Amino acid sequence: MYKFEISPRNTERVISKLSTKYTIFDVTKSEEKVTFCCHDKDRKNILKTLKFMGLDKTAYKAVKMTGIFKPFCSVGIVLGLVVSAVLWIVSSFFITDVIVMGDIDFTEQKIYETLKQNNIQNLMFKSSVDIKKLENAIESIDYVSYVSIVIRGNALIINVREQLTNSEIVNSGNFAPLVSVYDGMITSIKLIQGTLAVGVGDIVKVGDILVYPYSTDSNGDTRSVQPLADVVADVYITSSLTVYDQRIEKSYTGNVIKNYQISFLGLPLYSVENEVSYEHYDVESKEVYISDTLLPIKIKYDEYHEYTESYIDTNFAENEQIYAMQTREIALLNVKNYDIIKNESYVVRDFDGYHVIEFTITASKKIA
Image 1: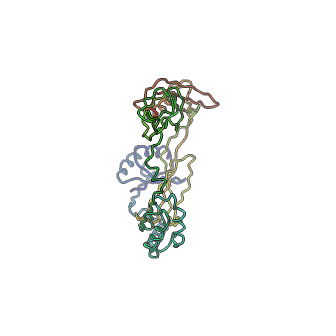
Image 2: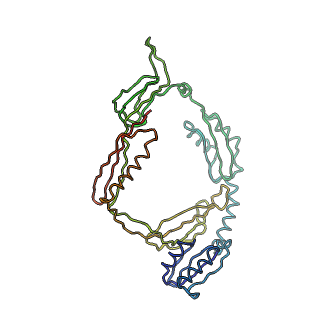
Image 3: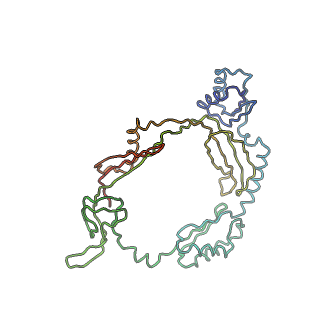
């Protein structure tokens, strides 16, 4: 990796030109100079570009940096990593997270009470956990049928399964009624089995019952059946789009400021906080753990990407049809291949500084 230092003359033009062709990073500015870094593969091309742009050799210089040692160029970082290593060793003896998994609809409160009674908590020694005793304690809770406890890294993982209640066993074979999955007006019904709850021309909402799960024979006897029917309705699919008289367009300059922080168990050990002087910028953040085990030692990176803003007139009156078609495309996302489109229309509502387009598609759909 190479670090470039250039004189501050016309730096906006220089940096913008380089960032469009090459990967440059760690851009910093001062009154005396502007610095940035690049990868080895781009060095020669960047040198040629600087020369082509009229910068003589006295206006810039390139310094070779050994990539593997760059993170350690600061004494503070070295000390932070040393402390992290010590804490990593110490933390390997502790439980830092207790995770309860599985079906705990009825027993959740009892499980956590049992954990408290057995002094299970974060930052306790792994060796102090009697897994067999804890499994027996949780398994003795009513409605718990299975318990498995393991230690993975720094986490104590408890997997619980509950028994089925009597009501669940009894009701598991019942048939549910057939309900509508759309709002619409019914246009045709083909009943296969069950008892109809609606007729052609009825208006239904999502969740309304269409077919009951029973049928009655000629003797008047009723029996439960799986309800089956083809129910088709006219469904109104709507979408809307708001268009402002002016919109803001971003243009990234290629300038980036990077900050980072090393922390352990949420406590900061070392950080680099460069001042963000950009008027407009986007922030990209990511976290990287030093170890791939379940250890809370991590480095958080924050990258600030500078951009400029410009205001552009949308010319709504001239482009109304374009915006209407954009709104139509949004509505079409809810139209399936086998649906039949019967009608399309849209209306425009004008407000102070913006417009709202509402597009409606009437489609013939199966609603059950």
